[in-house]
Image (cartoon, rainbow, N blue to C red):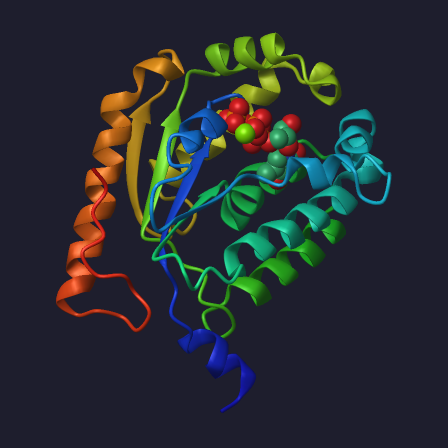
Length: 242
Ligand code: TTP
Ligand code: MG
């Protein structure tokens, strides 16, 4: 069997992407899934972006995006791919913070629009993206996209409060532009959408999102039950979150 066919035919766990603007509360929402049986939670690899053999690519990108955005987004694309394909055979459910898709449709798109990424750089990155995500290579789809939707002002307020050093240079208009691209992708389907979208109004405090969390668990349970009626090899039967 050719390698590409082998990879395409590999079983993929039920895959949930948690998406939303910077400061939307993705990490806090993801924390709720930690420790659930059969669930692999993969947080966004920001620590790698801040320390690649001692180099802080995130900092370089914010300080001088014209010079560093291609380098940074190339590394983001690699680390996101690592998460998508991480072998989690023991887990029937995998939950990712962000994805290859938001990196491409929101961040890279925005850098190009702002003129911070050259058309030549954008095309090279996009060629890699197309190669990676094209059906014949990896099985990278998703079953559910949980979109934590915030107003840009609230997301901006949160990131100011959390005070991550590299993000001091972020402006409200940058957050607004990212918000519009998220809306273009997940509400208006201006880019391909990989799975069902569940939108959660996330302006309220993260501590108040328990009902929404229960709803996501219920949706995952429904998907697991469907699988049990035609079980995939390696899937756990009767896995129900309580
Ligand atoms: P965020 O997605 O903002 O992660 P977060 O943990 O800050 O979000 P939340 O509060 O919702 O948990 O990503 C971290 C940083 O990386 C942020 O400054 C934005 C930046 N980034 C890019 O510049 N390009 C990209 O493609 C991605 C995915 C992130
Ligand atoms: Mg986070």
